[in-house]
Length: 147
Image (cartoon, rainbow, N blue to C red; front, side):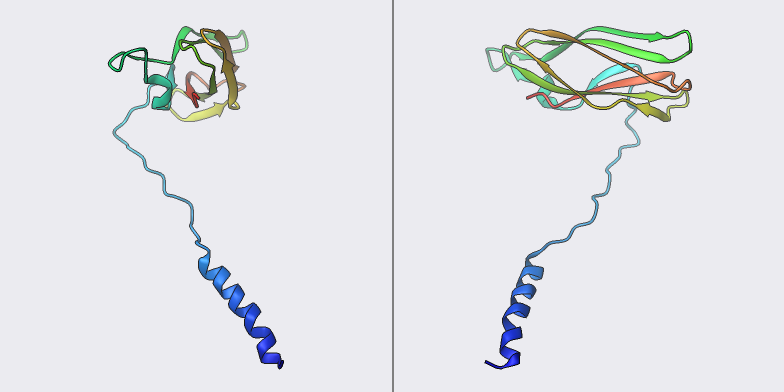
């Protein structure tokens, strides 16, 4: 076996591996400037959380209900948001909940960590979040991930 034959196989193998790989860059964000996202409210991000059939195909209900929705401000001027989330189904649900805080001009100034909440059938749990930014005047609680 000569030197050329010993290098041919590894080179061909590496070329096949590189040719099979697909490289992609980051995806571009799709924005809709005409949509105004409401502030000082709770938003459910995925349709799987809101739409489900309860008994009959035409009976559409929401999997969750927001029973309490309170915004308070401490004596130091920091905002706190409290909500109560109720599971309306007979199944366990896992929700990811996060609060985003905004200044008066609509710019986001703070956000909480995403918190996983597991609700047993017909159970209600409290969720609260607060900001450390005095400039926060508005908020939006986002709920996603019902399973």
